[in-house]
Amino acid sequence: MPPIVTCITPEQHKSFVEFFVAPTVTTLIGTVVGVIFGGYITYRFGILLSERKEFRIIARSLRRAFQDELLRLEKEEHIDTYEILAPALNKHEAAVFEFSQILPADKYAAFDKAWKEYYYDKKYHRIPLLEQYADNGSLDKRKEYRKLAIERIRKIISFAKKQ
Image (cartoon, rainbow, N blue to C red; front, side):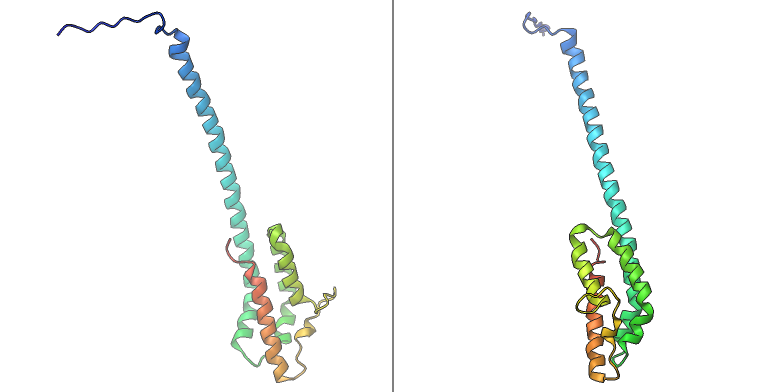
């Protein structure tokens, strides 16, 4: 079989720049853009993972701060709620303050309201009023305040769920 000979017309002739340099520059530009974009995405995901890890750690400390008191309130039906919560007040306040520092802004107002309902009286006085859980010896009030405290603590803890 005779060899096939093709002729290149002047219109088909490519210069050195068109044949070698243009594809190389295009590849180089694409590589640089890809590296920059990939680096940015990796950076953003790294920050997101770091923030989630910090949230989980502080959320766990919030849950632990309320855990003992919540378990006692749930376990024992005829227990004085005030005597359970009063000694733990400082522990709860510290955990809530720490958690509020990392809470997203869109959830802060609801969390702050839940905390104030638990910590202060109904009018949100600036003095802690755990006396709202004092039953003064009444068994009916004791059950009512116990349920109220459990409900309010669960509401606070609900903000520490995984995101």
